[in-house]
Amino acid sequence: MRSVANRIARIFESFKGDAVLLYNTGLVDSNFLYMSGFTSGIFENSTLIVTRRGMLLLTSELEYDTARSQMPREMTVEKCAGGKQLGDKLSAHLRGKVVGVNADFLPYKHFINLKKLSKAKGFIDASAAFSDARLIKDPDEIGSIREAVNIVKRSFAEIDRYFKEGITEKELAAEFDYIMRKHGAAEPSFKTIIAFGKNAALPHHAPDNTRLKENEFVLIDAGAKYKNYCSDLTRTFIFKPDTKSEKYRRMQDMIEVVRKAQSLALKAIRPGEEGSDIHKVAADYINSAHNGIYKGKFIHGLGHSIGIDVHDGARISSLAKTKLEKGMIFSDEPGIYLVGFGGVRFEDDVLVEENGGRFL
Image (cartoon, rainbow, N blue to C red; front, side, top):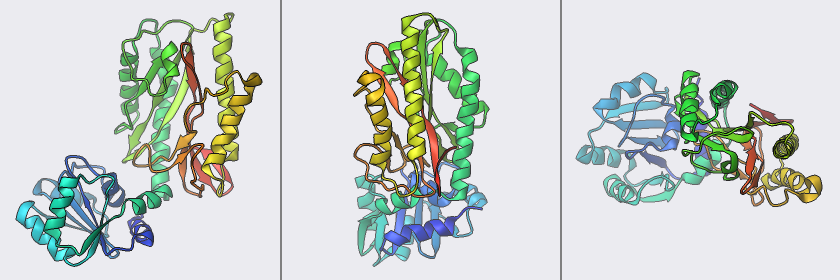
């Protein structure tokens, strides 16, 4: 059962206007998905009006039946062809009211048109209200993210059979995306990152035609979408390790240090803690390991919130002021990056529970 009434209430806890207007362009606003729960349909150029009493969806005949088949009880759906008809319906519901929009998504030209059509008293930015509401996940959201995580975990368990000398990063990325879909992903959460050898030192490396060689890193950063919700996990492997080589010993040591840092950060996660303090636990361990040989080589924040968007509104970093609360979900992803040699990252998604954090 979708907790739509609770989501409406959470939005209007901090948003003090009369209504919120969510308008999809050729892309779908993730807040539209958050409020509707729709998992089928495109809904481009559709409009959702959210009030304290419920929601009204104005959509084309093309999407009408799809919407009706999925709509929560708090929603009414009406056909709307756009143009004058859209203006008449917007003004009937919004004339003289203070209306919120998602300024983080809505393009300016669409905003100007909606402002003209609605004849609202005024417009204010409601994006912060949605961001705050979406940080705390309800049971439905947690269940969807857990399944998105499990899809990627099952894919990681299978991917090493595709490791072979000479395969390219692009080819392995295509294999991983196929495996995730086979296990139930609607689509990847983001473009899958595959990095071999030295490329693993580049956290956001785009897979290219680099070919896999023996005794090299294979870093895979991937996520799956399930019922609109994302996961984001990373694993680092060593392909055909030469266990007697100095290179292998160095790679394995990096893996062990990062794994330990991830574990220490997990143990530090609990309600009331500040994001910057959690980051510091992992960073301090990496910076001090082996008399500081990896100092300064953890070059990004420890994590970010995860939900409908893979980066869902908050971060765990040296500058993060976010106070952790029960029901939040963050990534825990420390790393070590040695340019010219390679990099290691391990990432799991953590649910903040009453007494601590737990990997999903």
